[in-house]
Amino acid sequence: MPEDAGDARRSEIPLRQAAYESIENLLKTGEIRPGQIVSQRELVKLTGLTLGAVREAIPRLEAEGLLQTVPQRGLMVPSLDIAFVRDAYELRRVLELSAVPAAVERMSDEAIGELIRWHRDLRARAEKGEAREAALVADELQRRDWTMHEGFVAMTGNRLMVNIFRVTAIKIRMAVQSRIQVTSYNALRVIDEHLAILEPLARRDAEAMAAGLARHIDNSLTIALGGTV
Image (cartoon, rainbow, N blue to C red; front, side):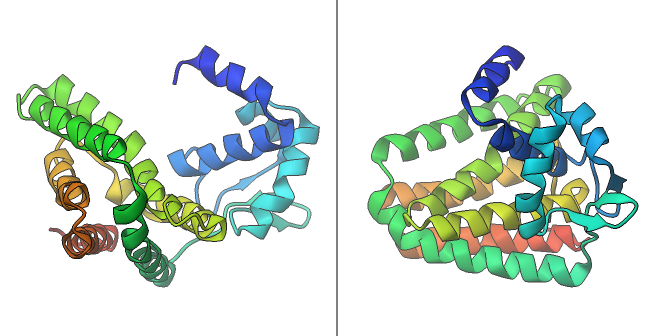
């Protein structure tokens, strides 16, 4: 998103929400990392928002387990161990697979078709073998990856499920982003795995979609734990 578009959007939402989303983005991108301690004033500098807005956002971040207050020191990004990663992926698996029937029933042909066309276009670009283009493809795929998965869960219409999935996804990225990041080396595999989810979805084949989704999540967990696929 262009910087001016982001600024315009921020001006249209409450400062507390803008601060929450900015800090959430810092966590997702690894600009602040598990185990790191930051002060409220450091968050003001990093987000470009007011101290009041940052302070108002902190209780929600604490309630969701994304930040912890450390007396006399500041705010700590919680450390997330291997046991957490396994638990988070198990929860992710339950949420996404339970959303498959709703996605098959409710997701529009237009939305599915656009996702398929976008992935196929990325694949064609990645297959050209040009290093710069491959890097751009990986970056675009990385930015849209979790949004697609959250979109499946959103088809349930269950806001609690969507919020639990969103926070779980943030924590997974906090814990293992360096391992599960889309790169020019794995982009084609990720694209093919996504298409193995989307093409059955387009056919309204819930069983095949669920199989592709389960395989994709299991592969991601294997990589998150240091394995290879």
